[in-house]
Image (cartoon, rainbow, N blue to C red; front, side, top):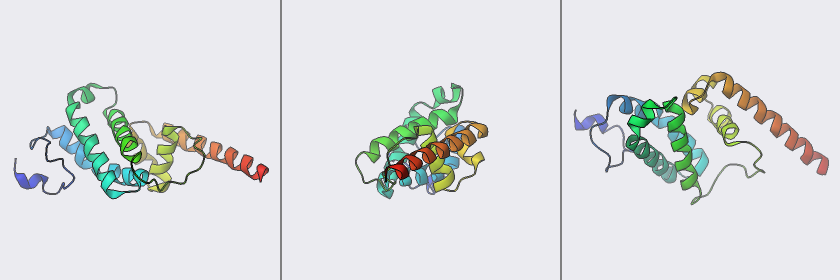
Length: 157
């Protein structure tokens, strides 16, 4: 393997191994950009986003064999990313609207990926490690929940 193979990955943690298993490397290349966009949306800070994605990929690499044996590697990876972003987000500003949080984590992630980042339902499902029908259901239930919250708020006003 050549060193320039990783030259296009400036986010790579220098402590990480220089040689990755092929499957891990492919997964990382496929998901790095959408993970970074998601993390940036959640943390509001490109540096914190970069750090959270790097930490997530390092954690994923440490568990890669177990991840591959899991029922859905993409879902396992998404959980690792979500946790890393949660930790980084606690220490930075958060640009997301500070509305009362009534959505589940899965609903919020589906909304972020599909509506805020403009990803297709197919890509959203692939990143979250779930079925397209599940993403559609999450988006519909999030819209219903938001509608109920807005209706309650307008009655109080």
